[in-house]
Length: 336
Ligand code: GLY
View (cartoon, rainbow, N blue to C red):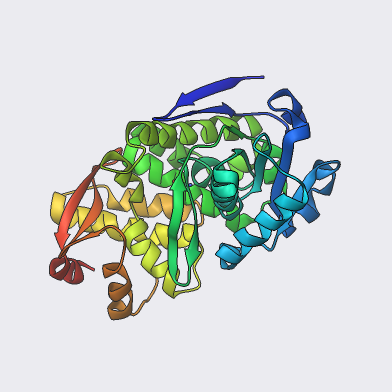
């Protein structure tokens, strides 16, 4: 068993990059564990939950709500969960967010860990400590920044992942390459989705490399004062599109990255936007959508990253080197 520990401002997270969920007993006292998962994961992997107290949620972002938290709290009381209980979220980003938040407020905070089951959750959503829920249209508007005690990567969960979910994960992987890792960008250019789906060792190495990119950024700036904002590359326009149209997160940020690359060309002389565009296509991601510019711009203005009359946009100087540039709203409207 290979354990790697990452220290944060108030706590540390143990990461197990290639470990079966059946080995959970080697990490924690399983008598204390209560799983939180969703109906999809539970149905597909029922055996893995056998013998554990398990809270099964309705799947999807639409249930990332206070009412879900209330029902979790009631079930925890039924299970007689106390301060020594450990909540373990098994699922994608919605499940890990809900688990981290519920654990942080139940009895004013109990221990929690994650077993991410989607590629996106493995490389991004389960990492970083921001755990929260939505209120009406306001995404992640309440929550905490609290790191999990552990993250366990069991790659066998990816066997049941639909193609669109693989693409979703690769959108964040390409984002990491664009902002931090030019060598990985080249590696991704040389390989393909099929390659990673069929090569377990290479996939684990890629997941570990990406998780470490995010972990390092979060360690440097846990509370998003500066460096961590770079992770928002493609997300400003991406979130606005995701809110408005039937796009997955990966598709929306892929389009956002393409636009951000073009803006980078116009404002910073970035010369590699064709390479970004074709890499996104290579992994099955869209780079354009016809959208109502006025409507999307209105949502974009409401974005949390807004500062007065400017928006802090993440742009590329070159592949592997991102910067944050405040762009006046009026200029941005023209650029888009
Ligand atoms: N939970 C995702 C993050 O902290 O970025």
